[in-house]
Length: 169
Image (tube, rainbow, N blue to C red; front, side):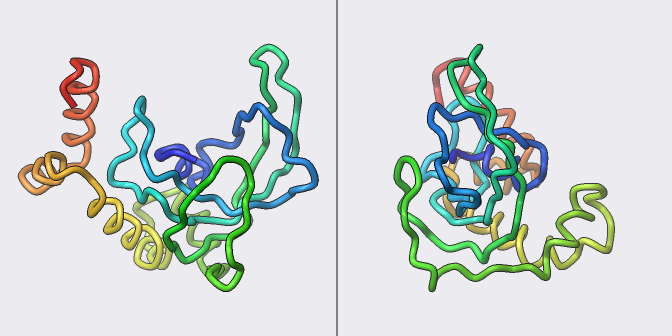
C-alpha cells in the first residue's frame, strides 16, 4: 500500500481500504508500504518498502457504485519494521522476519487521541521515530534540505505539492 495511506490505517484515520478484489479467506494481513509513495499525496518521510503492522479485515462490503469492495480494517498489532519487496495482492513473507510489538498498542491508542501525551512515549520512541528516520533517509535530497533548513516537514510537503501541481517535482 502506498504511503501515506499505510500510515493513515495505522493512525486509524483510514478505516476502509478499497480494492477491486475480495480477500477470500484472509482475515489478517501484513501491511507493507510500497517502494514508492503516492503521486497524489505527500508520502515522503514515511518508510517505503517496509512491513509496518498486522491488519485485521473486520468486514468486507460490495461498493457497486465505485466498482470495488470496501475492506473495513483495523490494526491488530504493530510489527518491528523491516524491508519487504512488495507484490500485488497477498503474498508470503517469512514469519521469522515478523516481530510483533503488542506492548505498543496501548500507547498507539493514546497517540491517536493525543499526540502530545506523555503516555504515548513508547510508541513514539520505539515505533514512530525509527520509521521517520527510515523515511527521511529515503526522501529526495531536495526535501531533506528543506527540512534541514526550516526544521518543518510541512514546508517540504507544501513545496512538493506546489512542484507537483506545476510539473517540476
